[in-house]
Length: 209
Image (cartoon, rainbow, N blue to C red; front, side, top):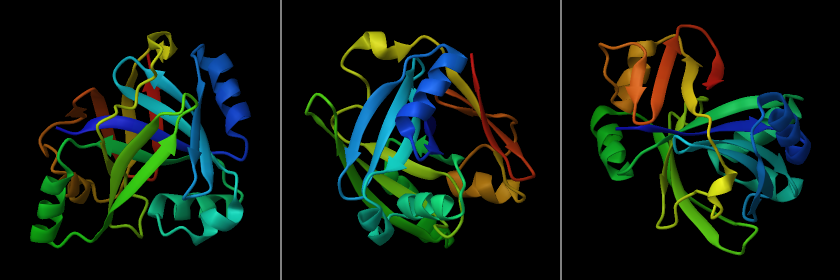
């Protein structure tokens, strides 16, 4: 079963954006680290139901503009168009190969898996891979983490609140459910750690409780 992994928020100043969110929602945010291969860095807020918010910015525009990673291309495009805010949703998969097989069998175009890594402030390295269905669109991407789980070593940095639901808008909802192999009979869609509300117009939002 898929799970909510994280929401991606584009911002020119991740530290300030995270601080503003922290004050508004009374949560703890922390410095994430740098993605050296992409020229980006982030701040994050972890939630008790095993998911998080990510504020991502660019520290090296030259590196970022050369990236072939669909997410970084989307980030660069957002900044080019003077857009800041939520730009993406990541859904966590335990076995990404199952989705690759599904896409190959049903003709769904995809990019990846794209490997990723970043150094954490404590010096440890996180590794993951991402899969982008229909990469020319802004559909949520799939993520599978490596051996090190993306949780803070200090449990006090995990907020007691839950990122309990995501609202995502797409005109062809049944196509969305087919791509991600979701139950077409239920609404909202139950994920491993929350709910996914699908609406028939462009929209991306979240609920914390």
